[in-house]
Image (cartoon, rainbow, N blue to C red):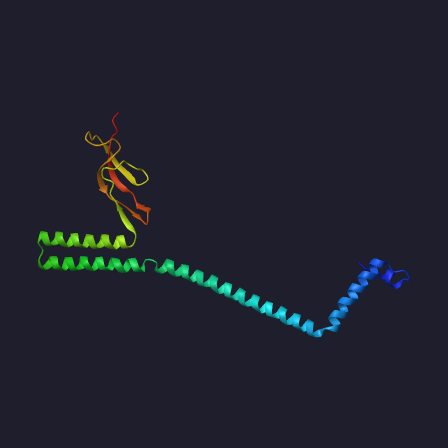
Length: 185
């Protein structure tokens, strides 16, 4: 740092003289080149404007992402619900037909067709049935309703499926409710 007493006095150190000459040359460069200063200010302004545009764009992207997530939550089931409406329509038509021609066979056939349609809709949306009959009991996928003696079945295997389980895209939605063979003790 330049000491004012050293500059005003008769003896100026070499270091102070170098600092003074550097400061003077910087001032001369700034004074000598107003065009360069204007160019630097223009460049700084350009960078500032670019920064503001980028910040605004980033904020717009963030808002758009939030809006997209909200729409996904709000309308994510729209396609599924539309497909299930077809199953509902099929059931309504079956009930209407049963009023006119209410044979057991026609009701059974209509019920089977509606169940098949529902299974197709579920499959299209990644829902698969878990039917573990004969498989080894897995507490991650199955819920044991009872344990029975079953001499002709493997120990700890599923002998009856009370209610099938379901998975959606590989993730358990509902565990299969099963009856399990008792292990030989």
